[in-house]
Amino acid sequence: MSGTLKDIIARTREKVPALGLTMNGQKLVYLDNAATTQKPKQVLDFIQKALTENNANVHRSMYELSDRATTAYEAARKKVCEFINAPSVENIIFTSGTTASINLVADTFCRSLSIGDVILIEADSHHSNIVPWQLAAQRVGAIIKVIPTDIFCGRGKSGRLVVEEVEKLLTDRVKILALTHISNITGLHNPVKEIISVARAKKIPVLVDGAQGVVHSKVDVQAMDCDFYAFSAHKIYGATGVGVLYGKKELLEQLPPYMGGGDMVETVSYEKTTYASLPLKFEAGTPNFIGAASLTPALEFAEYLFSGDVGETLKAEEQKITQYMLDILLRDNDVELYGTPETQNMGKSPIFTFNIKGINAGDIAQLLDKMGIAVRSGMMCAEPLLNSFGATSALRASFAPYNTMEEAEYFVSCLNRARKMLS
Ligand code: PMP
Image (cartoon, rainbow, N blue to C red; front, side, top):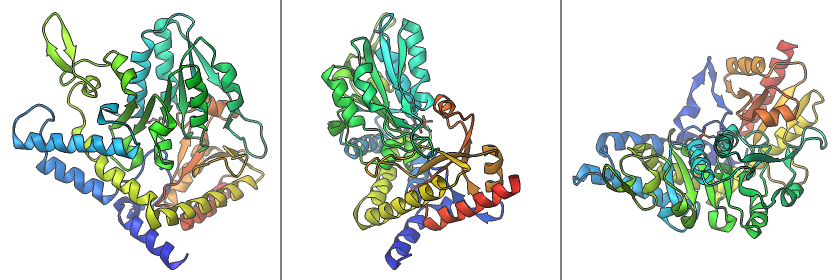
């Protein structure tokens, strides 16, 4: 490791206290970042300080403490707005997570659909970009159709979205298209911008699940031209229980409110209520205002990871780790990897989901845990995709920019030890 790389990685890891933990007597190697990321000290300190010094309900009171809480909450909205290049803070709604953001759109948008209308989703969707649409479709008699993934290419199972099918599937009956920016199983980057331009020509609105996308790529919602973009704070170094829904103003204005309650109203009588303007129309009740406010330091940390010398160095290291993992997993005849980039240009984030012939993924995960390694096993909330690969569970190692090549090598050697123990 070169001096600069070593220094940058050491400095970065020092910022994230959990990376220094010991698990089962071993140094923790945290490779479950697609599920949630570890928090930098700046987020932890911010939350502690906010709970101590800025804790009062937002948007409600005339006293200084409440003012401070409101200011921090609205500053985070501004930070999110800049981070994804939204036109205005009115486009940014705080929710409790990606799941809540998608449910909000599925529920409110689909109320106006009719029997036989089509909601088009992707085969590589997370459950939270499938089930809300099913619930909404059932209420109005709409139909769910699916853009397939290509599962039979090359070594490993490609998992590429069959983009060529999109044009054909976008019929007049399609009322909304729900895309995945980056799959939490394959790590493959879907060409959302290109797909959106096809949908745009047919005036079909598009929601993008950015739970992984916002973490692994620079998102510009205006350049992408999506109508909705959803993500979770906890996957991008922020608090749990906080999410973001970006929406185009004209669409958000047309949608009916999702939940009713305090803060989302303008006037209320027993007979009739008028609603607050955007974004508060969709923020009923006391929000997780401290968690949401902590998006400011969380996104600052994300910016630190992605910009300047640090960003370049960490990006280069991440690419090396990705190549190393792909080489190891693809040349192993007993490994079935789900998500292989077919060309050099096809983006793949360092998310590796795979099975080893004849060995249960959960058993491997348990043995790895004894060696200090945290990886996910199971369905990863993408049962239809895993089933289409012929799998009922899998192992997933997902890296963040604070992970190192040494950790990747340690993972591979422990994986081999675990296999020997289990075969
Ligand atoms: N979509 C994708 C692609 C995800 O990876 C996840 C989290 N695993 C979600 C949606 C749901 O996110 P949350 O549980 O934070 O709502």
